[in-house]
Image (cartoon, rainbow over the protein chains, first blue to last red):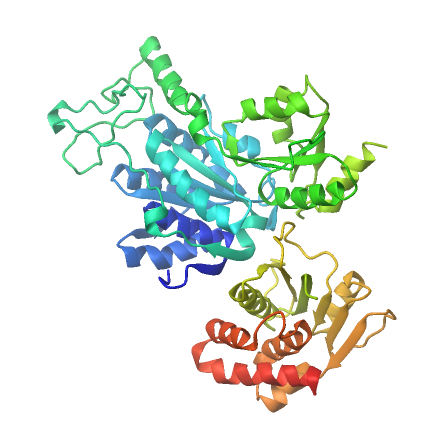
Length: 380
Length: 179
């Protein structure tokens, strides 16, 4: 970064790396895949200059495993992928969740299923982000809608991962990953960087998975003299496997609770012209840019419409969506899939007001006109 | 009075229309106005059709894609055929003179020897994109982006050993419009 010039025209993918580095990323392992490849490329260029490490792995299973190892050794770690690779990462995602190893997984969504539409935008992994790995587990997923936000929420993703000892997904889409706009860099002094809590006891007194009152156990790095066991099996406080039903249940409950009970701390959203809105468009990521234009256009025709944009996609912003449904007469959920986020919005808001879908799966961004046509058409 | 401009730059893959779009967007943000640049990310490499877009605006830009460009650049017949229908009726069409203009519409047309200028005056077709940037800049206007800022943007974005040639290409492009 140039010190006298604090802004630059960058792609979302480039901004993602800038944010990750600002947050302290020092290890990246990945397997290149469109439309996320720039994230790996730029990480490969920049990490060695900062004393960090980059490894291109043989596939995405290994990539996810490698960042778990990197983080366990003490480095803030990230991988980046798209649909097919995200599917392959799911098992080890669960491993990171139950072993409570902080890491960041970037998914720049493209058209699916399978190899689908490699170069086109989609938002088809809303539900996969939440339920892609088996078993109950915590998920934090953040969805930026601009180059600037990609930078800022890449930082936030690391901070949440470190604070709560959990994997965090930065859920981008091709539109945001590949577009170029101005990124205003923050001065390092303005950036809040959170680092994982470390043990203060002597190594021989360390009980690796004994949580503090905040439900989060202090984390020692491998190689620092603190010896402990890490397993994907349900484990007791020492980290060794257990079949004890009560201990097993408590472990899974705790790793879910440490995230869900702190939801207010990880809640990010934008409300646009919502003060008097009777019609509310719920949109996120690239689609929210079209929704905002559509709101402006419809406001010019005296339609009382606003936008609610979740940035935190998971955990689901139940409180906020519920509040929206108290005031709205109609809610439209616009997304580049066949109605995934809709399921959750309808679950919470559907009893209060009609919730409708605006969907597109052609590999093109939904346009403002398509949104306003859907809304206006519904009023005739 | 400049408020918002949407540009679509098209040609064949390898002609550098994406770099041309980036240079314009880069200059715009340096000027302190908003800009967003996108491109088609087809699997085509050299030879296929290529499209890049820039929106520059005094206001915040929400929807990032160009739907009805005010200015369309087409360096090849294929790209002209593909995108001419999207051009705003009061817009400006800039084509290489090798393109046959078959549509009859009220937009302003500049049929310019862009490829020939690059090849014959500058010695390489590789700078056709920067000749195009010159022509587009002459249409966007110095009241929107300072010329010094454009020159800086070109200098920053082209390979260092080619800066002089690209600056000459830019100047030749301006001359194609202004004479």
